[in-house]
Length: 279
Image (cartoon, rainbow, N blue to C red):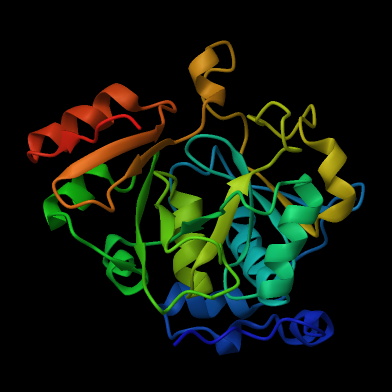
């Protein structure tokens, strides 16, 4: 059975201790994340931290202040039940702890999102997929698609918070092809809920400045600036990830074409999966 991580009233405690002692043991560079962060530029409602480079490629030296500070701050905020804005391989997103029911509610409230629309789960490693989903596709298929600009929909396991998408037995899994997001999920040590950083029905966001999702800033605790994402001139850039239903053995269904339809379909067919009939 799933256990919901308590998140109410933790902000002060986490701010005092950085909250990282609760996470799983990590390598030496993770231990160094315990140092207090340096002051950040002021931002309207949200604290702003900029990654070195694009953030899509891991910093050459993990001691670089921008990278470690952003990881430390984002983990602390999400463990306190907050919602943060993050760069991914497709769009800017809103992330929170998938185990914190209050944070999940906050995401829907911030976006004005219909509560019957699901949130994806972001993980740090392909191996983690087997903990949170009942996988019925070859391991090679997962390794060919992930990390990547896809959301794979499978049957959820009992490990996930029951308040996450309680209206469906399925869950969409994301492992972005983005170094910062992979590090963030791994250091956090649990599933993250992830959705696009925009008001529902408005255009997706590809950059922080000019602030494409500035209406959300007053409701966020932290914004991680990873620079512009993709080619802003291409209409494909705002399509988000390609969403694929893999819940039916031997078949696949395209729920959303997204930005990687052709390459994703080719990989699925390579493994002998056939498109499900249209409803």
